[in-house]
Image 1 (cartoon, rainbow, N blue to C red):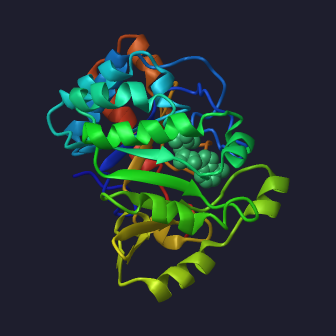
Image 2 (cartoon, helix red, strand yellow; image 1 turned 120 degrees about the vertical axis):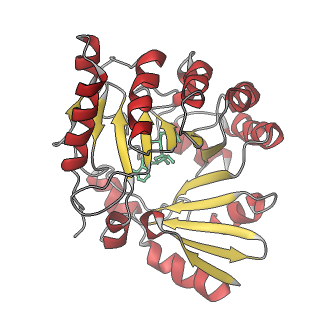
Length: 301
Ligand code: SAM
């Protein structure tokens, strides 16, 4: 297994496969980064994941933009599944197209999904995402459950004075059948929105600690998982969280084919797609990956 200069093993890759999205979330930090329309083909994605697998990376998370807007998404999953050493494939989606895609994705080899859903109120949903799709997303989540994608994680960005009053309603709705609720700290949105709506998750954690029957701390980003009457709730804190970085075992890939060593930085990316398109061999790709690993350093020290 490969380790970065800080001794952190790299076990997983988060691959953003498109900048495009069919929603327009008010706070979105656009993981896809810039607006360039360059996207890796399924063959290119497969090739780079094969290189990563040789270094012991066994978990792949597919994200965007919105990954399900790519018409070749099933082929992408199938190709990643075919790679020896890849043990788990997951996806982060807004859920809009899950109704159509859950079964084909499961059949292609997807193991599990995270669905982003910050509210159960249709008006707030429209205000947050720009779309009138709440019912369709809820049907998509049901379809994913019946397709056997498991566990299903519901990603909730906690927003002061928008959805903080709904957290327990969301937990109650999904805390059955092995769903996990991830409460995510707001980062990186525009300054005015952040100042108005950022909520310190410590406040929520203190409350959860009081009412939980059991708490475990996961190695990945030192996330706390709370067990309350059958519900599983995780908190994801980024800001001032040394543990987030200390246990980070993830390399990221941008849609236009660059390694991104740190979630919080865009100034140390390592391009590989232009080398693939110039016809480079795998040895060059391995060197580029090693360069990205070398550039990894904890953001919160
Ligand atoms: N389109 C997909 C979706 O909606 O899940 C995948 C991409 S989205 C950028 C991935 C995750 O990042 C979502 O769960 C979203 O809620 C979260 N996210 C986006 N902007 C964020 C922000 N400013 N702070 C915290 N989380 C954010």
